[in-house]
Image 1 (cartoon, rainbow, N blue to C red):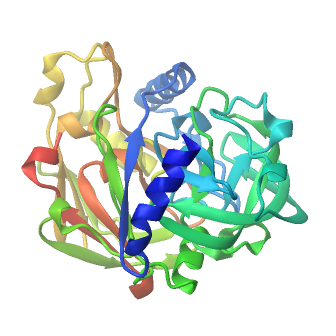
Image 2: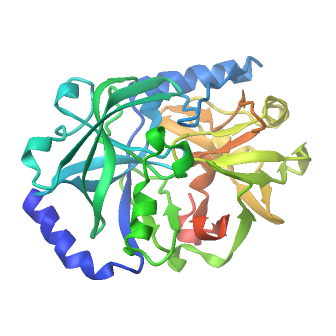
Length: 375
């Protein structure tokens, strides 16, 4: 496996200083996540809304097991493969489990610094608190391999203890938000790709697949126009810690649920579309979800989210989430986020559009997907 991965890296090295693409796998919901989301949905329907915890490290995750989208990376020389590294636009640190975390519940084999010729000790302590879990460890430096690129001297976390990640199926986390919210102010992999001249622009883009059998795609250094119908709509980033934008309006079946809109965070690390509690109360008046995933679910109205003057429609097939063949929930849930934030445009929304993170120009782009990619 390691030899094959190294060969792929060598063959793809010509893509440097341009843009590179790699598949993004979607995992099925874990049992723990299903239980958490069912409870969250039941509370919302009863009008009991939670307050999501936040700190400077990361956006709130309803449950850390809900990290659904991952890619493959390598660390060290020779390459040690981490096959399901979570891609998270709501945090900024790269980390993998170390030998002391062999029983923390992560997938794959822990990072072994002694096996890498390019490892450099750092030793600084690392501690990150997430919405419903945490990791602690130390910083290290090594070569990062991703989609044919070789990022030199990448600083990352080697995790010794972890809570909340058992059953998540991930080999670690790759944060894609701004360096200013990275623990210990560690330069992010994206920033190193740019500073080392490996990609042509400080930009990345996501197509998130709705199927566990069909991969999505992340592009670094640009975007893939084959995932777009027409031109993208660009919206300014209003806070450069997370990717915060202005949400103009939400309507459902012609009824206005949020006329004034508010600030929303675009986050691959949140499974749902989180809205203010007042918006959720309005939406729940018009949405009836058959929890057994019956065909009546498709009789619910469309929801329209207006961004930058463009309307993006979510059909019932897109916003009603199938947790398992006979378990469905509303993928739009209300919560109190606080700190001037109103929405989290998580995976439920991101699966319905092509999302361009144009960091270089301080804006996000949203494009309509081709019909064949719409659920």
